[in-house]
Length: 504
Image (cartoon, rainbow, N blue to C red):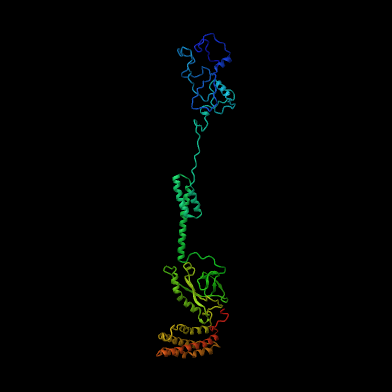
C-alpha cells in the first residue's frame, strides 16, 4: 500500500490483538502487505471465469473509487465486523483486463518463468490509472479477451474460406465435342449438364449452353448440306468427281471427231466409263465420237432417268451417225454404234445430251471414220448421196425364207425397184471427174435391168416364180458391187477393204 494509506494500530478491531504498536520497518511493512500467492501449474488461461484478483494495493485510498460491499475510506460502519474479530470476505473488485499487474501477480509470473516483456506498449494503448507508474518497457500480459487466439473454442472463431463449387464435367465435354464437330454428342451432353448443374449447383453453365448452341448449329448446317447435296444430285449439280488418271478427261469433255480409249484403270471399252484418254485418230483407238444428241429433260428440267435415256438413245443417235458417216463402206468390221449417256450426278455437266460413238470393243483401229460434208469432194458427196437410198433398202431384206414370207419379199422388191430407179437418175446427173466418167456411166447403164428384175419379183404368180425372180434380182445386186468398187476407186472412196493404215 502506498504511504498515503492509513495503517491500523495495535489493539484495533482490524487485527484483534491489543498491545502497543509494533514498529515495523517500511520495507517489511510493504512485504507484510503483499499476500502470498500459490502459483498453480502453468496451463492455458481460462477466459470464461471472471478474474478475482485483488486490486492493486499501491493505489491511494483517496483516489480509489467506492466499491459496493467495501467500507468507505472513512472506516467501516459500527457493527460491520463480527464479535470474534474475523474480517469478512472482501467483495471482488471489477476486473480490468488492461490494468497492469500488481506486485504479487508480477512475482507469480516471475516464479512461473514468464518474464515481463521489455516491449514498449503499442500505439493506442490506454494510459495507466492515475497514480500508477508502470516500469520502463513493461507490457501487460494478455488477459481476458485479449488472450484469446482466433479459432479458440471459447474465444473468437476465425472465418473459414467457402469451398468452391466444382465444374460439371459434362459441360466441359459438351463444349469440347462441339468444337470437334461432334454436334449430336455435344447437344446431348449439354442438355444433361444443364440439368445436373441446376440440381447440384455446380459451375459450367456457360460451357453447357455453348455446347448446346454449337451442337444445334452443327446439326442445322449438316442438314442443310445434306439437303443441298440431294437437290444438287437430283439436277446434276452435285460436286464434280475427283481428279482422274493423269492425261485423262471426263467423258462429257469428248467432242465430235475425237478418238479416245478408256482411261487406264477406269473401265473397259464397251462399258460406261467416267474418264477417257484422248489420242490422235492416227493412233490405235477403240472409239470415235460422231457427235451429240440432246435428251428430253423430265418435267421441271430435271434428270429424265436412265431408263428413258436408254429407250431413246438409238433413235437419237441414228441421224448423228448418218450425217457423220456418209460412206458406210469406210466402217471396218467389228465397229458398232454406241453412246455414252449421263447419270443423275453428271446430268448438268453433260449439257443434257448423249454422245454417239463408233466403237470396237474387241480391237483397236487407226484412222478416222468420219466421211461427212467437211471431208468429201463434190463428186464424192454426190455419189454417196445417190447410192445411199438403195443401200438402206438392201439392208431391210426380210429375215425369213422366200417360201415362208412371200408377201414380205414382194413388198421389199417394190422398195428396191423404186430405190434403184432413184439411184440411176442421181448417178446420171453427176458431173464425173476425169478418170471416173467411164465407170460411172457403166454403172448408170446397168440400172434399168435391175429395176426390171425387182418388178418381176412383185408380179410373180406363184411361189416358185417368186423364188426365181428374187434369186435373179439379188444376183444383179451382187454384180453391181463390182461396178461400185470401180467408181469408188476412181473417186478416191473406200472400197470396203481396210489396209493396215485403217485397221490393225
